[in-house]
Amino acid sequence: MKRLFGAFLPLALLAAGFSQPAIALERPVAAPAAKRFANEGLGTKTAVFAGGCFWGVEAVFSHVKGVKSAVSGYHGGNSATAKYDRVSAGGTNHVEAVKVTYDPKVVRYDQLLRIFFSVVADPTLKNRQGPDRGAQYNAELVPMSGEQRAVAEAYLKQMAQSGKWRGAIVTDVISYRRFYPAEAYHQDFALKNPKHGYIVRWDAPKVAALKRMYPAHYKAGFTRN
Image 1 (cartoon, rainbow, N blue to C red):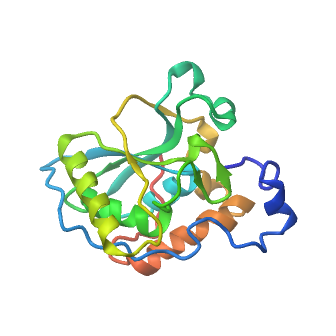
Image 2: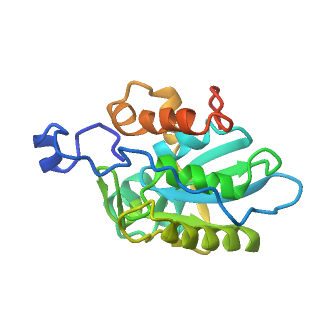
């Protein structure tokens, strides 16, 4: 994820003018409906999702009915390195991530997983998504309860057996450490910067795919932080 579109993208990709096959989730995958439903009871719940640049992860979940907030931030490292410039440089143990708070009466955790792997993250990629490279862009599920962990592990196993993806499923389930909200200018980024080159090229298509593939879960309004 780059603040200035093109400023730090791989030179080969820039030289090709994006004519090379993109590594992003160019064609959404119809991920299977979960066989193991989440049973989380009453009240809002929270889970963390990492799937490359947090702008796109936040944008998609902010258009999902039942999501109360989607906060971009950093997970895995410590407070001293929870800063955009440090995380982007790599070596901090942080991944760019989004903390999603949702109402399970409206959208279950397993349904969020299905949306995530259908239109946000490619589960066959390790330490990269779209044009971004590095461990800070790894796709990770960070459950915040035993129920979420059980559902996540069951769903990844189901995905691996589904035949929907050509490669092996390498997304990790990571124990929650501490989540650090990103700088203010990263929050609601797609809403505030709809014409930003990165948003137009990589993230707006993900929101469009959400609307097309999951109309019952899509909402036109953007959940602001």
